[in-house]
Amino acid sequence: MLKRLIVRNLSLLLTVSVIAVSGGCKDVDIPLISESNAAALEPVRKKSLPKVSPNNHMYHVLAAEMHRLQGDDAMATLHYEQVIEGNQDVALARVATETAAQTEYLDKAIYSAEQWVKIGDDQIEPRQYLALLLLRDKQFDRAANELNEIHKLISDGEFDALSFLTSLISLESHQDSAFKAFEIYINKYNNTPVGQLKLASIALDHRNFDDVIARINNLQGKLPAEFAEEARVLKSKALYKQGNKKESMQVMQDVVSASKVDNGSRLEYARLLMLNDDRAGAIQQLEAIYANTPENFEVLKSLIALYISENRYVEAEKQAKKLVQQGAYKSLAHHFLAEIHESRNEMDEALHEYGEVNAGEYFSSAQRRISELLVDQYSLDVAKDWLNTKRESSNSEDIDFLYWRLEAELLIKYKDDKGAFIAFKNAHKIDPDNARLNYQYAIIAQSVDEIELAEQLLQEILRLDSDNAAALNAIGFMLLEKTDRLAEASAYIEKAHKIMPNDAAITDSMGWLQFRKGNFKEAEALLSSAYEKTEDPEIASHLIEVLVSQGQTKQAKELLARMMEQYPDDERLKHIKKKIIDI
Image 1 (cartoon, rainbow, N blue to C red):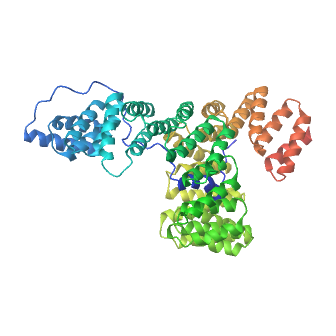
Image 2 (spheres, rainbow, N blue to C red):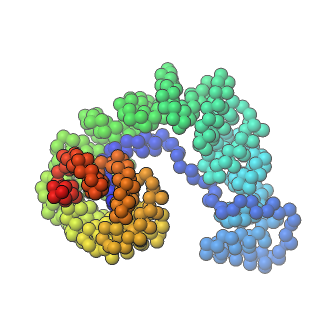
Image 3 (tube, rainbow, N blue to C red):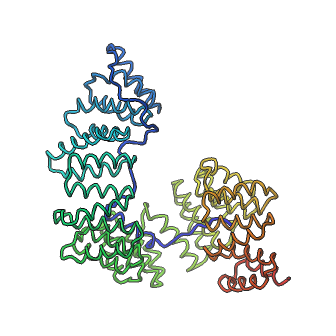
């Protein structure tokens, strides 16, 4: 079975993701220093290198820069090594450290960072690099000492040094080493209740949920009042991740029931409510946040998306009209207003609002919806004429590509595979390396018996990503259905199933493969499993055929009757119905 692509309503897509963004939540690890390929190779060099002459110094610097520009950081590092000792140029120390940090030469990166610290005039950045490089080298005590030095430097200013260090460590890609170094720093230099709380927050980032809960419980009654709420929010998150959803919700309920509640805590509770499909509860929390901070338009857009998803269109329209006045949110507001007009069957107004969405994040969604509404309100030909007019008035290949792709997807929806094939062909000419488009193009190509082209497109996807399960499944199923290359089909489908064993479409292909091989019992088990995941008519048609082949005609007819009631116009079900009648 081929993988299906589903386009969902924009508001529903925004409902959860927008809430995460609006709180500045960070669920993605972004290392301060890019990943290096190595663990420790050798101890930090203790012997000094011989001094180089001015001419050789210039040679090594220029050679290093040349190799760096060519992308050869390893060779650049070897040249920087010749000039870093005794160097007094901060810029040179910085680039030597940054370059070495991208290579296997962890020892040389540490040495360069040490030189940078020496001449950095108490700058924080070189110590950041040194601390992270040391923890990657598992020199945890030294790394902890550098973290303490950073804390001292920041504490001299107006910033929250401990929160800064917590953020620095939470973003580090070497998670286990980062936690170990931070734990030593806290226990040795900053062993306070607040320090232990920050350590618990790092443990949460590193998915040590039992550790988080134990640490928070040990801090009960010890934290200053202003940190007690943060501790309970951390505990709630850890409980939820453990699967203790009821207890997690109760903790957050207690937090937001207090007389004074931080907006961040309300936002976390809103996210938790959304995860539990309690949109009404999430709306209440967002309304409270927005009442406190009416200039927070990220929260407002989350609120509008939730209003729409809950069919509360009057409130959604009222707030969307506020949002449309904000330049950065204008296009999104028009998209929201269009959805609201659609809900009232005010299609001309909806078309107008979608047309007001400018180029940017929501533009392609708006243009797609215009094309679909034109078909619904007028005809497919009107929609095609509109798409063609847009292309003719365009002076941008990106715009041309968008409208060819939209035409292709629209024609697929209305069963015009030949027209879709032509549209995909034109889009492919503009952007031949677009993997997503090429997958769609391949699927439609095989439907019009362009098997060789379909195989070429899928093979190109696999050349760039050999473990692309969707492409493996597509090419395997195509070879199974359209050719006699059973062995090749089997290899592709089995690999796809190994990568994604729980995917319904791939399990269906695996079941159909076993049927073609004559393994009927195994085929029935696989297809039944796939059907349980999603009552898809194609999967059902495969399962019905297997049941018939096993003499289970009664079960086959019962399944067919249920599916025909849901999908009376499905061609595959109509075809299998003829087979059963003939029995």
